[in-house]
Amino acid sequence: MIPPAGAADFLSVQGWGGAVLIPVAGDASFRRYFRAVQGGRNAILMDAPPPHEDPRPFIAVAQWLAERGFAAPAIHGVDLDQGLVLIEDFGDQRMRETLDAEPARTRQLYETAIDILVRLRGHAPSDVPPYDKAVLLREANLLTEWYCPAVGIAPDTAGYTAAWDAVFDVAVEGPQVTVLRDYHAENLMLIDMNGSEALGLLDFQDALAGHPAYDLVSLLQDARRDVAPDLEAEMLARYRDITGADERFDAAYHVLGAQRNAKIIGIFTRLWRRDGKTRYPTLCPRVWGYLEHDLAHPALAPVKAWFDINIPAERRGDPMALSA
Image (cartoon, rainbow, N blue to C red):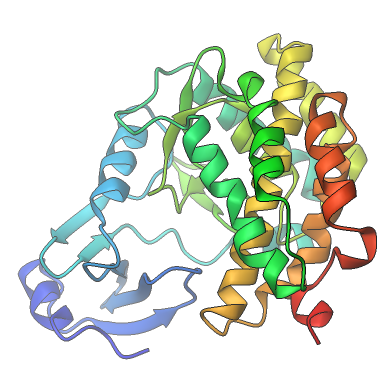
């Protein structure tokens, strides 16, 4: 990970001249991250190179969240022409590794994460695009566009579209919230906030205005770690008890769960086939498990019928292994 050519000059302008840049683990995008270390202070340099990346949505949502008391990184400096952003360093203590090391904290940390979503529900959405049926369908189509060809299946795409169209109404109705879209244990950081432990938010640059159940799915059907079914049920009950969510909300949760998991299977397949990232297809069996759980809900009957006909059980799994 070689720092971008303009990093040194950018850091100098921001008052961080001479800072040492240390690569930080990134995500599945073109974005790269470096820890800037200068004396006794740290910051994170985000390299979001145009035209592949645009940091403006991240900046806007970060500021919107911070203004409402959520723990989003402060923005220290920006150069949009180079796609460089200097942001607050939340450290390395992710919720994911904390749970692995201290399983006794599982309920407490998930309750904290649920309560953040309850608070988000209390705010009108930020100025972001809508998470409407067209976006939901475009994302769900990633499964037929990438996974199906990878495992040798020629699917009924018209039937797929019709099945999703029959179930999406419940997923777009009602009050909208700012949907962070990648709200899970690897994007939640344990930080100090005003002397107390809090969960810091990351990776929200793709936020949209949509149904509040979506981020619950991101958290409780985590593609990168197993979430026990009893924990999922307990946290859903906590959210319902606080917010008064009803059966329509439960239906939306499973519809959005199925949609998100179908999307993720397609994305993880694409990351392997197009980008050569072989870690991601190995996560697909877990995601298939979540997807099948969601498809069992009565609200998904048309979509379940399509999957039963088009993708038999033995073709559901790691696309890299199934294509061998």
